[in-house]
Amino acid sequence: MDNGVCIFVHGPELDDDGYPPMCPFNTHRAQRARDIAAHMGLLGTPDRIERPPRPARRDELEWFHTPEYLDLLERGEQEELGWEGIEAGIGSLDCPRFDHMYRFPALAAGATLTAAEAILSGEARVAFNPSGGFHHAFPDRAAGFCYINDVVLGAMRLSSAGRRVLVLDVDAHHSDGVQHAFYRRADVMVISVHESGRTLFPGTGFEDEIGEDEGEGFTVNVPLPVGTPDAVYERVLQQVVWPLAEAFAPDVVLVELGMDTLAGDPLAHLRLSNNVPADVVAHLMRMGRPILAVGGGGYQFEPTARGWALCWSILCGANDGLDDFGVGFGGVMLQNTDWIGGLRDRILISDAANMAEIEAEVSATIEQLRRRLFPLHGLPL
Image (cartoon, rainbow, N blue to C red; front, side, top):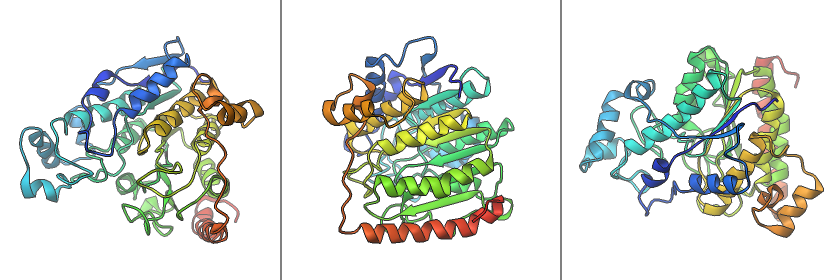
């Protein structure tokens, strides 16, 4: 793809007004990713632009969220919400009440809309908002660190302009709020590759959730077992995700790059290196469609920021994402961010003790998904 202008959407407000310190969702990861990119010369050139976000307007937020819920978020900045807040998912460890609980999510959503508008105007072929990715928020409920669903709003903005939108979510957690928004629509395909709901919040996203009515076949869920390594994940991409994505033929791709899939994440149980999200981005670039990328989960601070910086290096054309000796050598031997190779993780050795079980479970999932979905899209089994 001819990269054109690549826009990195970020600003100090997104770093200063984030979640309270006791919350596991560290909003400073985006600033760290931005600093790594800037240190490596991947920002501040005519074709790699850093752009501040604007807050999403109230009418934009109401594309998906109810007025009553938004009123509650605004009121919650000033006072405790009691039982009314609990019913809306607010007041828990993952969605605490805090002083910026409306302003910060609205700004993060505005950052995703800023990225969408840059793509729709033709100004940019690639735009990245690492502060986005709040895919668990529902119209009237917060959940899983998510108050306002910027992924839904970004996809709505793109689809309202007549674009066919592929939402590809590679966060460790199921993209349940996004699935809810588009479950009966055929102009937005939602593909979520995630740890199985049998072992991880939100407990949804199984193979039989494929959409309804006009949307049948346009929701794709790939649940993965605990301990899934790179090679198995790559097989899922090759045998399920990429064929369906190509058959859908999107005009634009919105990809959520949650880094809680990385080995050692305290809130999830997959065992990936950051080579996998890098390969995802590289494949999307080769598809030749405009890309709107957002952040998402990731509860290891440095690995998450480094993974996003690596993905940005591919998005902005500084790195083609190919696994050559130079990149691999840098990741293994240097373990620094002085050059692009140093952003990559070491190759992880799979745990042979349960690999046979993982392989068998994933093979069954692949077979079921191909049988359910491929005929709906004219793909051979």
